[in-house]
Amino acid sequence: MTRWAIALLGPLAWSCAGEEFRTASNSPDAGAAAAGGHGATAGEAGAAGETGAAGSGGAGGAAGTAGRAGSAGSSGAAPCGGTCTGETPVCNTSIGECVQCTHADHCSGATPACDPSTNRCVACTDNDHCSGDTGFCDTTAHTCVQCLMNDACTDATAARCEAGQCTPCTTNDDCAHIPGKSVCDAGECVECTGTDYAACGTDPVSETPRVCDSLSRTCSNRAERSSGLCGACVSDAECPLGQLCVLQTFGDPVQDVGYFCFWKRGDTEHGAPAECFPDGRPFVADLVDARSIDGATSDVCGLAVSTCVARNEFRTKDCVNDGTADDALCGFAPSIDAKCDQVGVSSSFRCTMRCLSSDDCPGTTCNTLVAEPYCEL
Image 1 (cartoon, rainbow, N blue to C red):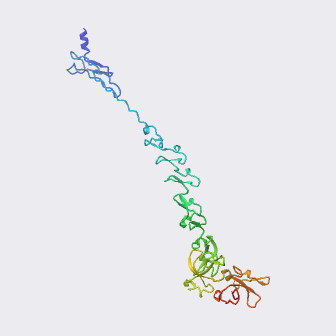
Image 2: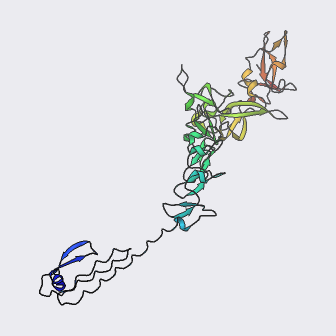
Image 3: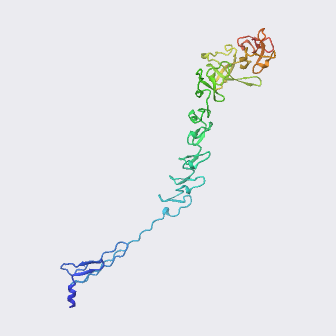
């Protein structure tokens, strides 16, 4: 009775490993072994295959193969290979390297900023890091400098920005930002020079250009070519063509009399004499290699024994003091370059010049019959 019951259950088998109900094969080989169980996924042990149910008169099924154990997951490597120290104490996690800094917080002292392109501590990356006399950041060199452009250089003696430093000007363009001083002269920005005086404008009446006072390098109210022989001058441009503005000296010891216009010897095209003596009377003294107020060098014709002060007072300045002739009222060095003399037989007295010969006198004769000769009035 028992054998028949087993025979009736033969077509059915339970697979416990997969928790599913399976129907035995209907093939003639009823004794075929049941299929082994599936191996487990990597990382867990596979379940043992189920034992096949015995077929009618067949052998039992083979045991299933156990699944392989999964390999353990690898642990991640530490950033930058571990701890960063020394001159590169900070780990730049984006590139996996030890660097000096990734943020300004990593920097201090003379190099308070972090250059993001090199991860190095630098003096500056923008103007906020700079102050005082070096208030601008050269973002290429990462150093604080005095200037980046000329506009930062406001001193007329150092108006040009070069290599981060304010230096003397070399051209007028370097002075364009200095108010009222647009001309560069010997490294300094000034209002004008004797040869560059366009900034001085023109006389409102004659519309003649005004000249520059070459000594102060400021604009004057004097007109171009408005002076004359022995006339006071502040630049060569104030003298007529053929003349130069030259410093006159006189006496022993030598004293500066002032700047006056004198013939430029040989400039006959502009009216100057070919030779000072006798053509330039009373300017008969050759002053060789005289240097003008604006730096021009030339031979000029000057006065031999007197001064332009005395020449300009000749016959024009009254020299009576309390009814008496007074030499002290005449000339630059009274009684030496000039004297007071009576005009003819009149009661008038005027200043005159000292002379050695009539060539020293402006159109009159020299009285050489006295101990100290003078030009007759």
